[in-house]
Length: 547
Image 1 (cartoon, rainbow, N blue to C red):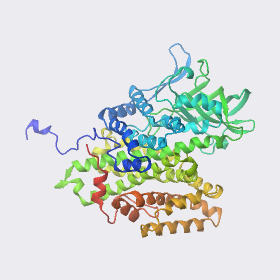
Image 2 (cartoon, one colour):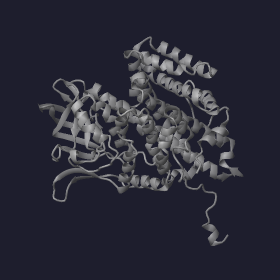
Image 3 (cartoon, rainbow, N blue to C red):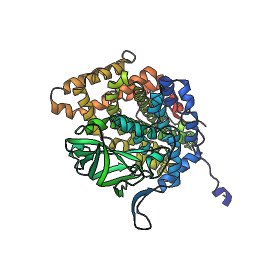
Image 4 (cartoon, helix red, strand yellow):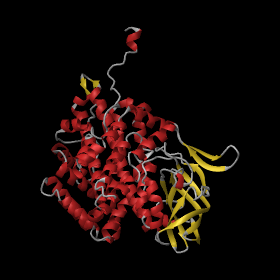
């Protein structure tokens, strides 16, 4: 072998770049067409094309390589509490805001656009595949609008700024900016998910303005323009709107103590904050803070599902692309029956996640008709889809072998990111218990789930048996509070998979629905790559990207 032959590269998969992330995703395209029509799908073509470019992938890599840095003081010793980001972060943010992925859908819906949230959900799922971290401030900006509606004057002031499609970074008077971003601060170090243990105090100073003294344990994107936070007012836990810059341009007193050193999501700045006489405006009534901010939590939970579905899709795309172009032991990996089994299994999981996420986004577009379904569907999907993501990404990484274990492959980034959405906005137990709370306390919620899963009854005997088994489990668990809580995860898993199964049986291709019903019901899934049958080749072909 000559020296030149040593460096000749063969049998390596080409880069997966230059494809359309929207139109090249059969499951996502089908969901958009089903819920919003051809015009909406066509409006996403440019976003999908940009998301699939090598340029976008490179900006995602750089944003994660060069992490945000806290700048507590300027050169003269003045306390400024700013965060510096790599230019690639700003490139990604500019596109995300420009594509209308922040709060724009709320304004569009008010102007009569019927499918604004479906379009935004599909765009969020696709664009997140460029780099997931920067979608955190985008998500919080989107989610802030429903909570802001608790105060008409604050909503009138802030919603147009948040709904802007112009990314305008920097700490300046909000009235002078072309667009704004929002964040959220709920948890504190002594309480975590139990926000009623919050000790931050809020004292009224007049005209709805309060001074806050306390801390927040996790607040993402401290350079955002406004935050919704919880604090203890005289009449109990209350929601507040906290601007980073006060009217007139002076800086609000907000100390960024440090940035979190996280497992993943490293492009995004998550911070610990301290309030020392920080000015904030009451949002909603005193003592009703959780009820006020809960709509923001619901919207961020939808984005957790979309984000996890996005991670799944990117991982499956990379794995299926690799095995389609890599040969071993005499043939292409994609032609090996066992590899077909693995990729088909991963592809079914990804399609089920995408299909459910888009169905719940469609429910946001129909708030008057499907509020109950959205109420129970979001914690179910948040629990199940986010929990399934780490195992899927790990298996997809393994499909690339050693090539998948190096940073250049993007698989390590996806793997580090994969547990995130299961932790944020309520961990698995919190969401499973929230499902039970909704069933017990909110009339119509269980009926909405039964109606939705009932739409597929009679089409597949395996599915029908799973529905009956889950209803029996629910009835048996209701015998005592202890048994009900002990069964919360089993119930949530079964109920979530039945929502997925209903959609796939009704709308999915036969090969996907068949494998799902054979392998996923009643909701306890095992190791990927243990399918017992089905048209696995067709499923693999459906999931593999094309240029």
